Image (cartoon, rainbow, N blue to C red; front, side, top):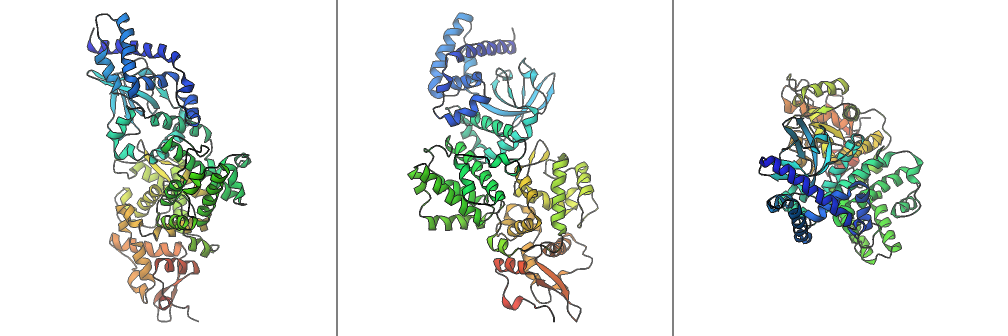
Length: 550
């Protein structure tokens, strides 16, 4: 019998031992926290839970070694199990995707950790996997290859897209997965159940998301009688605001579960201040009004739940609110809109080419499979699809690649910045944030764009944005005689082309109108909205404002 055959036989026998042992494990007592265990109970098999308890908890490892050793001696009197068992102890449950399948093996890659794909042997259990599938499984690394332990827990095809989005969102709440992978993987061998919980929670949430949650117009969304979500309807009479608040509360609830294994219904969770700080830093509040509503709602919730420690974490109110507002104003990645611009934004009197372009770009992401290269740029075939649907006003080269169309690169980078899209398996895929944006009216979209473009952190979020000196051009537009320097009739180099497009962008975003004085010089007149924006930038002084000629 070859070494590979020995391994296959050994794994089959150990799987049989785990399968017989699981019946003696009181699964309902495995996790004391019912909220944490509930999604696991409905999604993760008793076999995987038993294997996690036997192989991945340090305190149970000696017992597992003893139990398996005793049963093993009845099966194989001449061969020891220890060398095989050690390799299983070194493994852990994780999430994988099937990249490629052949007779020689199955290529799978972790969707959690930044590590290369591995080839698993085509065992009976592994042969059931298909290309593109995502699964929870344990891969054992041996001296003769990689083996799937038992069977994979596969995500159904109809849930795969939503499941992937949920995993990406949950991963953001545990940065250690990416930033300190090896240390995090060690915790998985010492009783950390986060991967099990992450899989179960993402699976359950994917099942519930037939339509993106906060924008389902079904009245059942608002039919909540108790719990923290029921409070949302007491803090606003506007249905859209209530739904947005409920979505954010769900997001906070998931964050609490991922961070501490308890949700907001459990009084053991007391770090409400940390939830508010994270939401402020990430720009999760769409405006100051929502920040205040959620703050007051959480305080009321803590009072009703008699969670004094949670309530105290939100005090003193004046200092905390100022801190949250300061953080929110500096946020650049979320959907936050500057309060003064929200107030200044009236109804738009003209259409915006920029808003229309970006809308069509996002619609193309929704409707088409846009393939990206290793650099992140869309490939030529996808570029053709985008160019067919999206009006192009700027082309800096005749080369048939995305970089020849700076607007398209900008749109992709902006959508990634705002988490409206994400890259997976070489594709650009939409997120719930994209749906949120598409539901906004043009006035709100303009405020979001201006709020982001004027953020002092914006240019630092991606090196590409440094090619677009937006704030610089906007500031120049207010200077006397600006038209002569900015309005180049036929710019030839890329930099000049982009500066001219930025000048047009200012008008698209309703920041100013263009006029011609009696001498034929072009100048720029800030709109009321533009005046609020330029005041926010600190570049609008009284002497800068050129009154329309009478």
